Length: 608
Image (cartoon, rainbow, N blue to C red; front, top):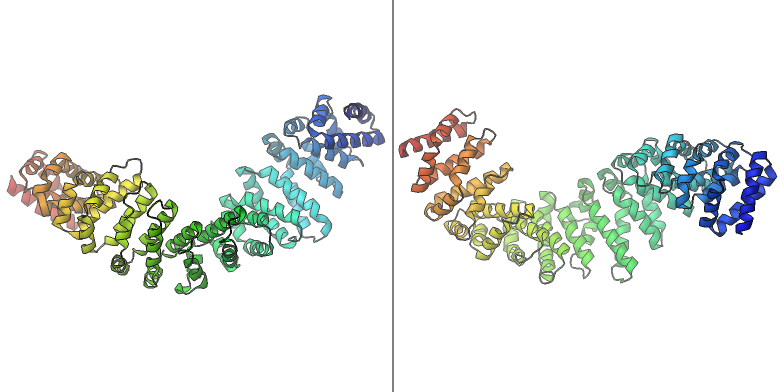
């Protein structure tokens, strides 16, 4: 074979110089045979003997041999080491010129050659881009999509494949294709050619590539891609084919307009069927499909309109079926069910209805199953759902009497930051305006101890922030001396003083209100901590800072008045000459601030 190839390559060099067409044709046949037999060896030999630079001339002459020349290039470019040499030999511009041919076979082999040169090759893509090849191919696809002739299927598949190889994982080239308007054309192709497996798969790969780009979503949303994909999904029996469609649906479903289109097209029913058919299976592909379907279901619920449509006032069959996932024996379904509830619980009306319908009990039972050696993602999802359900005021007392805080506290020992974060958020939502609950939790030594520990979790800013906020909330909502004593004994005061310097105004204010209550309810017990944590210096800074919000200034002055009853703290106030800062605030544009400044100034004057 090697000798024949060498002979053929020599002949080809001579024949191309003499333009002897018959001889060229037989040499090309020999090359194709050798490439089929051993591509790596044959393509290396072709390069070695300097044949690549001859091929542009053979392409330019446009003879009956032209498709074979393009076919040889397509085969050579299957070898990744040969793509660069193909570009260097100047093969791309004459190939792009051949895209203007009317001959179907020429177009087919040219499309293959360009597609293979582009595959995973920066040089190949760049050369095709410079020669304007993508625009011509996109134009061909558009005109061919108007024509339902069955014979076009193969050419369309090759052209779609060429564009995918050209743009794969390259944002700027994908954006170029989107600007050329290929998305509506590909969606139309999918609708017209669902019987053609190869072309359908190529369209799906193309969608998967382009859908990752944010700018594509708007174009997809203006087509009937949702209907086409759902229709295609309904026809599929094979796992691989369904998986291909899933891979396109996931990035598309991140767009809220497309979410609603997918819901209207009946995707939810398809997903519920997949879940029902795979839930009891242990086959790897079924487990994977169950996960993909239930994850996609949760994603659809992230859109406000799509979520509300499926909620149907809490009476929707989809809502009811998703609820049935929570008590399931399958962890993936438990997770998806809890996440779905958290997504449905995004407005007060839904939350109130769900609490009335007994969902809290289902979530508590789920959490109980995951206390010891539990699944962290399920814990996190169930706590997220409870936190959202606890937002409406009317739900708080009901959830507290259902035992939510007791169940949530079972997760205090957790060392997983996502669980810690949701646990803290749930408790904070529950005690908002609920004095008795705040009192009960605020005097729970174990909880306060854990909060103080988490207030120092510098590696986890979310957990640290939520711990501080819950510590403050326990004091603010209970207004209880016992809770204040519990926080002082647990060494929590210094964290509230640090929280008062937060960059978030809401956290600053929550800390100051809590510190004001501590000073008002048990100044004697807090005195040492206030001095050690430089409370007075922090307040001076807040009052002197022109950027401080009116409520920050107001609450800082309230604390100043409250700490004057302590000798060491009063001395600190005098030493820092607070009276100068406060007197300036008497002319503050905010009436509440200016009034409090007058009162504070009087107190400071009386004390001096």
